Image (cartoon, rainbow, N blue to C red; front, side):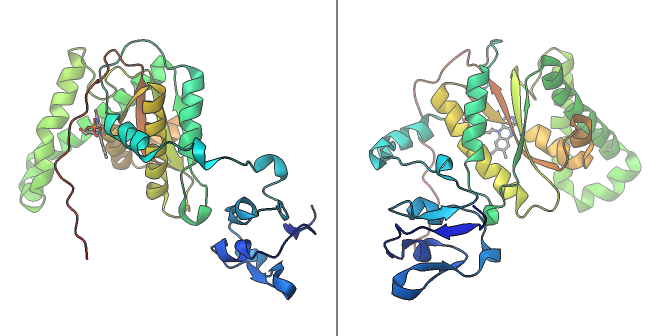
Length: 284
Ligand SMILES: Cc1cc2nc3c(=O)[nH]c(=O)nc-3n(C[C@H](O)[C@H](O)[C@H](O)COP(=O)(O)O)c2cc1C
């Protein structure tokens, strides 16, 4: 296809593509037939192709092999979906068994399907499976936290900083405990995870942290459905932020890590779910 958008003869002029295009690329032309008038605005979301009832809407980014029919009956029921969400846990009781490659691939695929701002799709994934690399994520985090702890304990810094940012000093015992536990053979950062999924974006992406965390949630639900345990690597993400690019550089990641998932096979499974406190909701 030479042109990015071609409307084939089979178009019935139903106007659905005009209606769903978020960027108003397509207008209704003569006899209701769509015309692509503002191609430069196209964000390649694929709505036009996905809504076309006759396959007449041809988009260079979505050749026929990238367009799939599905039946709404295949979707999980709200009850099933809600049970998945209730059952999802941050399971840290992990076995030494590695997560099968196929499961990791499906988790990445689920994460990759999440929405991104302006369909920028600038979410990249690094899957860490080598035991040394997984361990190095804990070591990196402890090194960053150790440096921060020493800085906070410096008497001069403490004198100035504690009155200004007392909450920073609330973390000091946690930073020190993590190192003590690690030294005692109890890694409270990776907690025996055998893999990690780092979600990152190149510089200049729009809303990168939002995109990464939406991807995370897709991936975590897929992990639960696959029987793979996961938990959010908040300590590592904090260390990433505090170290301003050092982990990315070490791993050869061009961009910034915005979310990270520790993965492992469960040693124990949760057979019950518990109720959360009621949601804080305002209806207006
Ligand atoms: C932003 C964020 C950071 C988190 N960081 C960690 C972490 O570093 N280590 C960990 O074991 N769990 C971490 N968690 C998991 C939470 O502790 C967990 O979601 C919470 O206790 C509720 O449990 P649930 O996920 O099983 O429902 C994090 C969760 C979020 C949302």
